[in-house]
Length: 403
Image 1: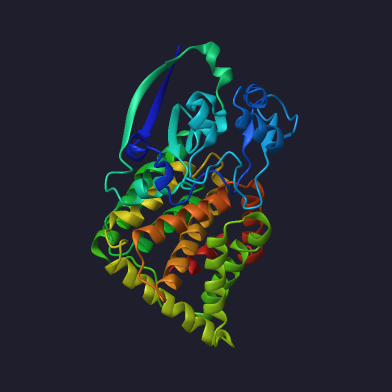
Image 2: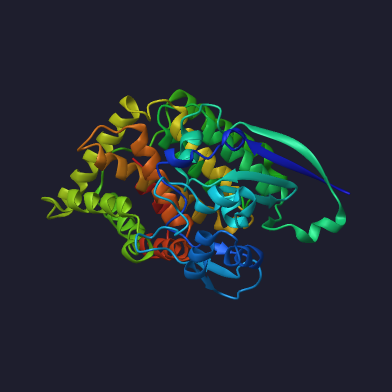
């Protein structure tokens, strides 16, 4: 027998599908695989409507029994089983047990990290965004012990081994992001400083743990006192990197998603940056204004509670198990986290120039973005390649996206 810890955060426990009330339904924008058993059940269903839709909408892939076919979306980019009242026709007529494993599990995820099975939910669902961001205790975790028979080990999916140093770094990172501060970007800056320190000591926590703890305590003290902050003075170098990051994020949006809301966000950002921005100085001033808008949002809008953005970054640490299993890629993982935060920040700041930002705007934007970057392996790969192009060979340049 093997002991395994099952970790379940509060937001996972509280999740319930909102059905027709969903702001961003899950039946569009990604590939839905159908296993052979479900495929045959739909094709041979006693329900004439289910049978008819399945014969027209299921395209064979023959990529194994678990990915036997895929659902061909309609001209609106939506699953043909999706009804006008935003419900699943299969679930309505045949019940939840008739859903394919992909549809039945979504938006739930689980992954084995070392001796832990960590349960999660993808932010591509707007209800998940609401539960994570707007509940103060959303990232509180519950632990239970599961005894695993040796014969079951081979059936586990998404397994990643973790060394003791990786697990310690995760705890350090978690506490640095969770620490109280005047500005959440200061927490990101503190984490960057700690990562740089770890690289200098070659991640030797077994031999230099006391020294690492002392450096970590100094960072915590600086956060609590408000002495650690990101320089908010906009520079031309920073403005140019921000522009390249925006272009990288949206590079393939017209070909990889039918999410018209996300496209509209890109157009708004592009129009704002192009308007009267004829040189680097103008561009610098444009981003400086957006920084001011962001500060105002964090002080007066639905983002004003200090736990909102802190929960978001803790969610990022939790789902990626930062620093991951390969410590040589730690700064790249940090870069992606900063890049995601930067995009969401800029999008909301631009929106706030034209309208008051409500919770619904935040939920829709986050869900749209994570559907875009999370439902396509190609998009994720393209973003990683784009970082190589925009960072000038220095992943620490991501700090220019802050402030």
